[in-house]
Amino acid sequence: MRMKLKLIYPRWPKLPGQTTFNLPPHGPVVLAAALPEEVEVSFTDENVEEIDFDEMCDLIAISTMLSTQVKRGWEIADKFRRQGKKVIFGGISTMLHAEETMKHADAVFLGEAEGRMEEVLNDWKCGRLKNVYNFMGKLPPVEWIGPARRDLYKRELYNHKGVQMVDLFHASRGCRFSCYPCAVSYLGGRCFRPRPIDKVIEELATIDNNRLFIVDNSLAQNKEWEMQLFREMIPFKKKWISHTIEDDPKILDLAAQAGAWYVYQAVYDTSDYIRERIKRYHDNGIGVEGTILLGLDNQSEDDIKRLIDFLLDIDLDLAEFTVMAPFPHTKVYDDLMRQGRIFDFDWNHYNAGQVVYHPKQMSAERLQELYEYAWNTFYGEETQESKMMRLFTRVMMREMEEGTYRPRNRQLINKSFGKEVIRKIAV
Image 1 (tube, one colour):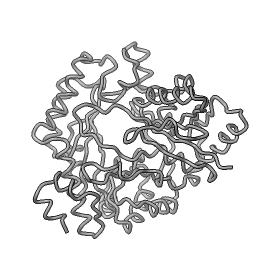
Image 2 (image 1 turned 90 degrees about the vertical axis):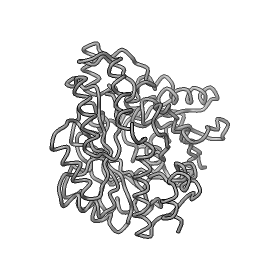
Image 3 (image 1 turned 135 degrees about the vertical axis):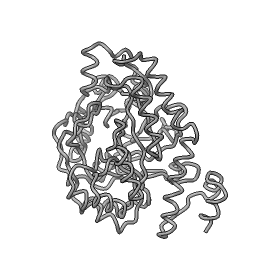
Image 4 (image 1 turned 180 degrees about the horizontal axis):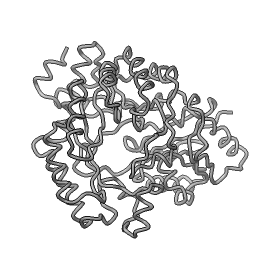
């Protein structure tokens, strides 16, 4: 007898003043790929559609990625449990907030799902579901990672003004770096675990979307693997976004050939190295969205203002400003807790846009003002949405040159981009 599992991705409040769009989430469809074949899955992304609390199902699974999702996830779970349904939680922020989540769940799954879900579902069938399935630090072989269940997406819900959004995809797990505010070393360990290239190519071949976001923590972890990955990607003619690419001429050239569209690159100082780093991306036709973290202990108010001026000078395509968020199980959380500097424990405020701790060189109120100043100053002459649309226009032009362009809604695109672009894409 087939069981039916309802998989839910809770909504979260978006930051005010920023361009809002929804990407098809990655974690839930990776989890779905790890389920036994006899499990029938229905998926609801609450960011784009309402949850049907009356849907017939046997088990509820709630997948959370962000701290700002967990409280909504608890609300959803409480409602289903009042109806007599069993609820299991998993995902990144479930691992970060496990103890609190246990109060709202019949079971909490911690760790990576491949090869483990049969045990969980067998326990459920036998009526002996455990409170916690803790596989933290017990990493499954990366060879077990199969193609994500992208068939669960409702494609029509993932576009912005008629422009098709990217699909998320990962070619590796883990990270050999241990950046100060980051939780990755806790979640996935400090060992870089690349997927076998043939498995990566197998999954790429299943993705209909021509636009991807490679969500690996960093591609710049193993030069030989990185170069092999890019070589194998070239024939697919996909256009993709990623985090940092290795600062090497051969690798940047291969990345461009493979379809690198733009990268998220941390900009942490005003050095000539950063200036040249951005220029080398641009020289290879790769756009750059700078990721800028505000509120570190070594930053003064003047440092932040100089950094913002520098960003305007180096011709970034986009910038994303965040204030440091001390997520549980990170070194920054431990340090600030020990120093008594965290004053807000409402997880809805841990959105990287709200100050929840006392900075070292200014007040929390002043850091919040500087965060707003950063966004307003960088996008003072051209809006974030306009800059983003320029990047999408560029990629559409490249797609048309290669014959891979597939418009989803020409009327909305025309309205968004203007007459000059209308003439170019109305072919």
